[in-house]
Image (cartoon, rainbow, N blue to C red; front, side, top):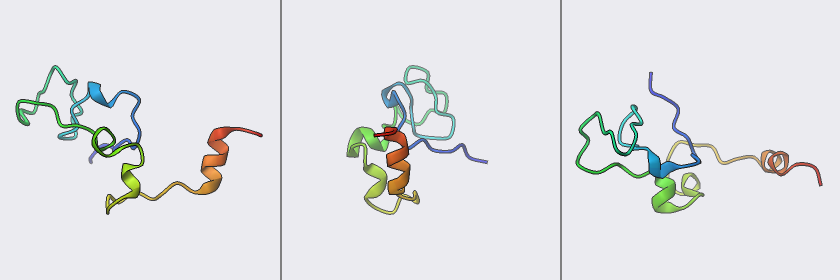
Length: 71
């Protein structure tokens, strides 16, 4: 079973996103090229999952309100 793909990781630059191993950027175990694979948020911005057919559901407005806390 594949690991869940994080939508907004805290430090995407520290991990290679090229396979399900999610290796540290300085320890590429899978041999997936000479460089690490960037997370889509690094290339397309924080709202990357809203554009295109990535298979993620957009967050519900009430979820955003809950994240912000009480007014």
